[in-house]
Image (cartoon, rainbow over all chains, first blue to last red; front, top):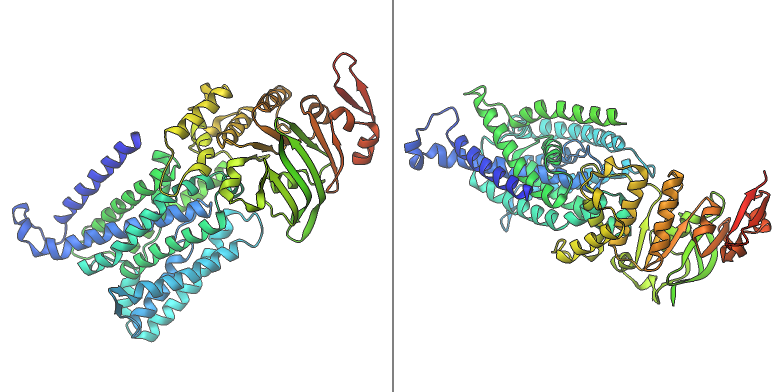
Length: 319
Length: 256
């Protein structure tokens, strides 16, 4: 029941943060003018919602990848899934392929296809030997990320939209609209529901692939579909919010320290914490050097890369 | 009543054939020990029986059910597997770990219910590990962890419990403790385990299979199996069988 209290606590924290973040920014809005202020309702509100949704998508995606790959270092950014999604999204944004069909924009779909390509390559590369170390997966991710970065750079140069695509790529919520929020909402909902009900399988996998199999889990089928879901969530986040790294690494790690490795709690608590983390990071991004904004991708990399090194070091020390 | 019937089993890893045409049957309540030199296929046989390796040819029947016709979940409700080594999960308590054994009984949209907790409690009581229930698994000693691993398998409520060298990395006190536990379990479940220590296996099992190069070279009661000829043909080691006239257990003394 400790976990339930924690969830309530995090919810209130999220609400409080979101609320106070409404009043933080380059322009000061007095509380009594809140209801009539366009700055609050058309600029800050969608921005906060978008940051929260992006946090949910990336953190949940990290939980899923770490669970099914049985790799504590897995994260959509580190594995090159985000970069793959970036290639697809940039391709769509820079060509005439970017249109809407039945309310679904083509950008997340192209982002998904390229992200899927990236994750499959990384997965295959890391499975060369039967017992590859967790680090092999990361190396494969590095290779695929560099490849994707090169292609991205090429797309940006050839497209002639250098500035707009580059700015999106660095990760930012500054041009958010309710439209963007609506694009991400179904992906976040789908991913959360799916990973919540598959938390049993993720728990069984904690004991290893073979043990999970012996407890009736169809490991290959479940790994495949869970990777699909994580990739879809990442692709949606990237296509709207750009490349924001390390959320999927930092959040599950900290949450695990707090509540343990049970996925039934890990999934919702990580989602909430991901939302909180990105709201804080985004508020920092737009207030620290105000009136100038730092792209949130930069903020997260400044925080996330040292955290990644810390996790690596902790693993080494334990061996 | 037949607990397990194996007919003409052939299997292996990748394209490498390991098990050559094995057939045997055991009854409900048997405690079967599988012995033989390293690489003879003991573990492979266990893994095929647990449904973790594909059956190339032949048939496995558990309590009359043909394993080939069962889903993975159904197999997991009949057979539990305790591997030789299991990594303790950081942050898991003993209860958490045992509860995982209920996985094959959970539906897609449900989680552990009262009934599952009852099973876990019963298993903890049966193995007398109440004092460990809230201990973190990575703080257990090797022997304690092995008991918890067996408890997790029992929470699957299997008909058949398969163990891969459950005592080879334990001290003698825990070796005997685990063997006594398995011997006791035998009244409820059918137990199959691989062993290295022939004398201990003979002391506790009521049936032994002696394997060599993927084949069964002898199958029967321990005192029938552990003969100087069999040991020589399996291990190329000279041994002398000594019998305790009061108790009927055969004991091997090796003469290297």
